[in-house]
Every structure is written in C-alpha cells, then in structure tokens.
Length: 105
Image (cartoon, rainbow, N blue to C red; front, side, top):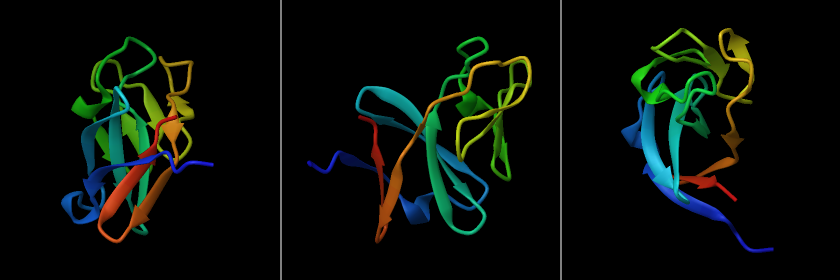
C-alpha cells in the first residue's frame, strides 16, 4: 500500500493551542496543535453554513465557528454544539521530525 501522507506544515510553526490553515489534495484543512503535543487535521468548513472555521478559535480540542457558534471536536470531527448537526471530516496525521503529514485520501 502506498504512503498517501502529504507534508503540509512544520511542527514548530504551530504553537500549542493554535492552528494553521493549509491546502492538501485540493482541500482546505486546519492543522490543530492541542495539549500534549498532538496534531489533528480537520476540514476548514463549518457544516452548518459552509463558513471558514479558520476564522474561529481553538479551545482545548474544540474549534468554534465564529459565525453562529457551532463547535466541533478536532480529534474526531464530532459536533459539540448546535447549530451544526453534521460532523466535520477529520484526517489521519503523523509527525516525522518537524514535518506534519496528512492523509487526505
């Protein structure tokens, strides 16, 4: 099986509690750095109204959309707060040295 991971960011470039918007495989993603030096990748689009989650904020493992307050768990994409009812997609991430890699297949 081929390695489908694409390098999208450098680990030192995203402080804990912050995220970085990236493009990978034709998708807009957010790479989120949460406590414990863990990185997660999710779609940068709120499922409630297609707004950019990258304009919102990250608190712990929850990202909040600035438009209407929908919240999602960046570790799984699960909806945490209405008005969103559909989860966002999350993607496998691995870190090799400084390289953050995502599988968008």
